[in-house]
Length: 426
Ligand code: HAM
Image 1 (cartoon, rainbow, N blue to C red):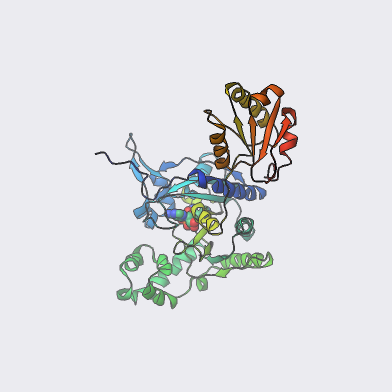
Image 2: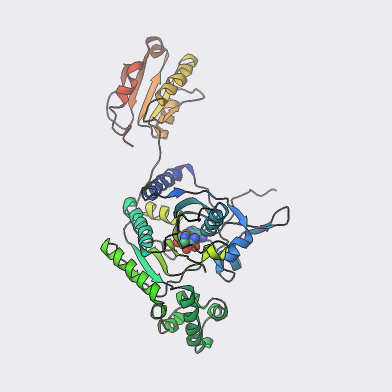
């Protein structure tokens, strides 16, 4: 017996009943991002594996255990992108986008990580990301944070809070790393296996361990904020000042270190309690060293990415939906009327703003056509039978209203349906 082929664990179809809300979310984000003067960049989904190793970091969870890596037919090691920042830097370098220029870029698309799937955590998920290049002041950090704050307002999401931290310059972080390791070594036996391993590989990650015993040890650890270099300190103070003046509340979280190695100075996350364990809906920060690390001239950079599935989950919890139902369902009786209906609907679609018009295909009884019209959730049904065909008229039936259906000349259809509430409102 053959088994049914199913989608891959952690990778989901977005079904017709759901895609309307996705489109609405995407359109809202796109509109806001573009209102800040950002340009879209579209990158391939597959890149050389080396790109992610060199940017995200060899000893991060993503590179150590989560990448979909395979050899292609030439024997090259390729990887399905686990995130977009590295790809964006690669594209910018390849096309000379960073030469004496500032860039404000954004992208949207699927990312892949072989994580343990659970609510809010998938193996294929979608991000909208924003990346900026060539600006090293706190003004641009503030800009992208204000932009992200604007998303939640526009989407009607409350109870999303902003956490901020500064990781300092790479040199300052390196010096702090030594101080942190000296402190943690005193408690090495009390750390869990993961943290013990990270003592040698990536000790800063121990700061955001979820293990309560490790958290108690970390609570007394020397603070990164006390070892910031003067420039990073000033940058961070100015950013906080700007955000306060813009009326954006935030919390400085000294254990916010992020799971990717490329960050320096500002890091931030927008978090919510409403999604359980996977509460970070948007995250990012500065990565001033990455362009240089990947072979370019030193170029300051910062950005963020948000997880669309998590935001959709929040919108659904708020009972938001969007069906993109047709405005009009076109029913007809008889072959001649059916052919005429197709041509008439083509004309209706010539109108601006464009109407969504669904034509009944495949015939069927009057009753079954009306059932389909109901199911389509159209606001109006137009009906043409032999009589209407002969008289150049059409029957207009407002679906959600308690009003009598009306027969009108075909030339007056538009004027008639414009009276129906909801049509052409969106
Ligand atoms: P990240 O924190 O790895 O950062 O991911 C950003 C967001 O993507 C997360 O906050 C979360 O909402 C969503 N996300 C991540 N993994 C999953 C998953 N397995 N399932 C569902 N959603 C997920 C980055 O990717 C950086 N590239 C962000 C950035 C851009 N930093 C600077 N520029």
